[in-house]
Image (cartoon, rainbow, N blue to C red):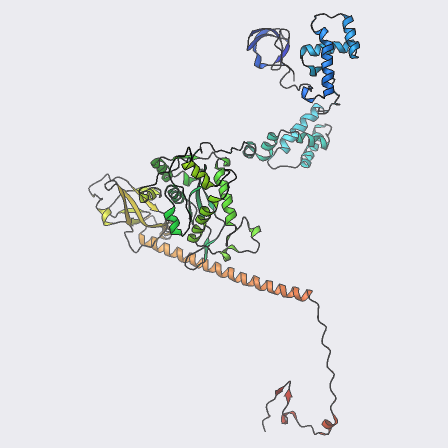
Length: 637
């Protein structure tokens, strides 16, 4: 290590320009003269270096790298050079005496004195062992430039080409440029010497490099107490479920789950069929806020789930169901601060991602699981082995959370989530018991999907279907030409009932179908039926409720026919496959089992002489016994 000297006469560099220090101006700046043109200027000390920024400094000997013998030799040289350091001019006699004492020439003593005056450290007086140019490039500038070019353009790519492929590209470039080809080892060593960050950015991409190089925070910012930060997300569960009536497989469910970052306790979850949407988000938040004991009793799950209350901050990803109007309005109403993960920064959702990994491992142990991929399934058919209904899976999952996950030791916490939550609620700095929702009905409705409609003479109309009730009709004024929009809430899983907010009641009013014969539908079924009815009508006229109901019936029939055909084909295919397997096993057994030798023929007994004397009668006149069976007597002619 070399000190930067700001004494007058010192030669330094200001960028690429060589300058000479004239005098100091203050603690942070000096007056310098450019060596090239002699111009004078003021330079900041922080901008001055002992060599140009692009130059590589000579290898320095540090005190840490010296052996005790080398340190003793350096101390001896400093002591012998001391008489030469305190005088401007030194007589040749003194130099000769010092040279004789050190066993070196007078010119060596002069160089040692000059080095020590420039950098007064004893380590500069240690004789450096020649390194033979190790670590320095012996390539020509042209070779060096082509080597860097091929690494940048061919090796540092996200396709991750091999070194052998990069060397082929180097051969072609050197041949074209008529430059001598560096060896394969030179290319490999240059690649190994790359900065790890440069290598990751080039071959993995900036996003992956940022993930791998970013520091891993053990403590999520702001998660200093229970419910300070709650993360929520969806996942498709790796298990097939059956219906509750015929116990036939009907598909895989979606799980929407939320976790408290401080305690790692699950604050709520919701399982449903169909892609998770705003309803799933709303029901999950609802179960986060309310107490869980009533729900656990309905599921028949023993144990306690001491977690409820509104989260201070709700961290979500950027899916559209999280950015919908319902979530925004609910967060604004309940004082929840909604936050969204930065795009392509999965580390911000690391807590819930690790929880989902734990859940996946548990689900892979259930009957009907799909595992991670088809390869690990082998001959296992998840649909054939499916046994859980949606309600049964919900009970199993709640039981696992309450009596397993919350009580197991968490390596990141050093204790169980249940113990961590208890400390956060009732410890020395605990926040106490969280508030509970007073009107759970209003809370649940506030977390359902929302829309706005006007009250008309036929009630409320959504997608050509009317909802009406006598109680709603009294709020219809035929004389009012400026009817205001009313907020409505609905459960997309069952559109038979909607809830209309009435300022006059300061409450929601439940309203059913205007036509009681209209079939129950989900929101998705209704939209599909409307779309199909329009296609059948082939006109611009408005379609009727009867046409929508008829379209819904046809679609259901087609769906059931398709299901039946699919099952029939799969069953037939399975039977054929089993028959083919049996035939194959039989053939394999015949081919590999040893063949039994044929049984020897029994010798024919010689007829006795008594038989020869008898008169042979026709077969028809005899009762013949064959293998113990008596032949029927012949009929007389």
